[in-house]
Amino acid sequence: MTVRVLMFTQPGCLSCELMKVFLEARDIAFEERNISADREAYRVMIQKYESEETPTLVVVSGGAEQVIIGFDPERLDQLLAPDSSSDAGTES
Image (cartoon, rainbow, N blue to C red; front, side, top):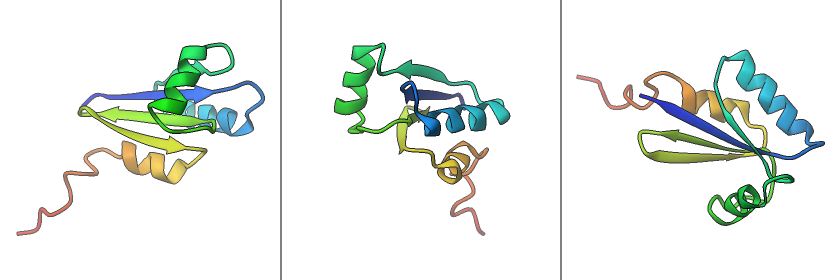
């Protein structure tokens, strides 16, 4: 399954820099949207994803979007774990 990661950032955001290092260390490709330079990205972050904080990460997988607001590496690891959703309820 293809996963797309979109990250909304802004200059001077330490949590944004931590998230970039976290993603790069795991070889996770991401698309960065600087809300200071891109007013449309800012509008999307506020209106569509209901976030007023950076980093805001959107993980798109199988047509579903999961939003992570702030630096939350544990939740991101859960979302990106291979086959994490297919293990539930498979007991015989």
